[in-house]
Length: 505
Ligand code: UD1
Ligand code: MG
Image (tube, rainbow, N blue to C red; front, side, top):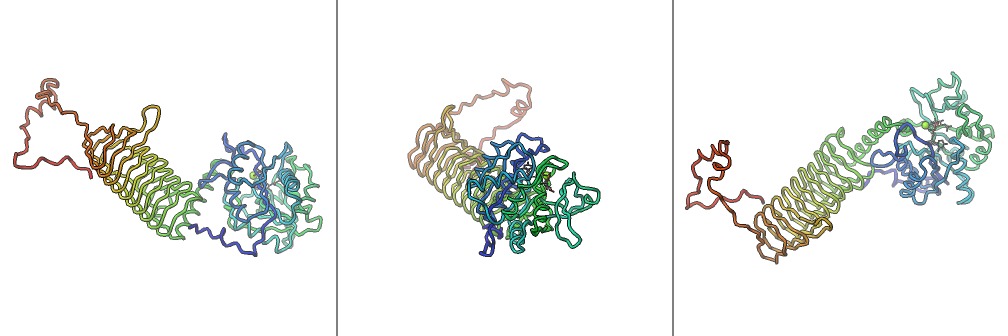
């Protein structure tokens, strides 16, 4: 289903790196958040989740993630996404160089000495794509480089490490902003922080870096100069698409990157045959799957593992999380999660689908309905105003307006089971546990406390009392009393049939 071809066009020519090391030990204080920076989300995925997805795409033999700040939260999150990843704890010695030192040491110690290409990426650069990492590894291995660094040209390079090149363009090294002189600060080509290293070169150079710099940190960037001094080839690969190397340090940047990610996701789906009427008000998570000829109307948000089949129409103003929508179904102004909507079914407007809702083919859940943990058979309709929870409804049953499953006795939840071809009248309350057989009916306002056998009518009628002249006696002088006084009795002529109860079908 996914049009993301980059994951599927792997050929034997692709060189899998020995390892990817994702740096994620930093504090991220500018988020001003109790949540660690890299656990903040965009496109329905944490920043580190995006980094891991990009890394996984190049199928490294080993994947290591360096953690320190909020260690337990980050480690738990990473382990849930990538159980195979090696979690490496950085010690109190600061710097990107230290982070890679501890990671390489941990990999060497637990997986045997790493040989070949080692890729380093950051946990807070969420738009980086697998295809870019693949190009980096290919350029690196094809040229036989010691180090290849991904670079970008920025109008304002403040804060970044600058790529220092010789007159012939060869990369001499990286100088950090804080260590750079005026001439170096004029350089617009910056270090993205994403690199491919030869493992042996990396190991050797990391053994020789020190903290004699403006920040008193072990810089990974010093590896480039050392590798070059050792006679290795050091190259830079310029990325044209700057978004891919942009990091998020605060919530403003996160929102900015989130909007761009969304724009890219929408464009990808439109190119794959999905109609998105208003990309400006549509948000689709990276993990959502859409078929050809799906239509997404304005104001729609699709999250999580939502999957929408061919020719379904979703929206306007609909939010679906982990919802499966069948072929040709219509879902209008609905808030749903953990639900399955059958092919040809219709939902909405103003419908709240809670987890465990399963609507059969050609079924209907109409306006102002809330459903939870309910299985509704093919062709059955719950058209208006009600609640169906902890229930099972057969096929081609019509649930009348305002029906409620009273599923909760204050302590426990109980099930309501309703058969096929049942017709329930308005305002029926099912006091669970209770069951209604196939082909049964209920009367208006029935409170069903006892099972109704197949083919029976369930009523709970209390005789109506009418007190003549009550309004004049009890509400004298009101508009109602005046209207009553002025009215002539409206009794239908005997030869005409009784007017039908205002109908719900
Ligand atoms: C780093 C680069 C700089 C580059 C910039 C791109 C160095 C010395 N500088 O600078 O050349 O232009 O990234 O964004 O590498 N991290 C750890 N442990 C640490 C320090 C950092 O894991 O001890 C991680 C952070 O979580 C982050 C990444 O490494 O994901 C970069 O750290 P950051 O402090 O942002 O580096 P910069 O100083 O911005
Ligand atoms: Mg940074």
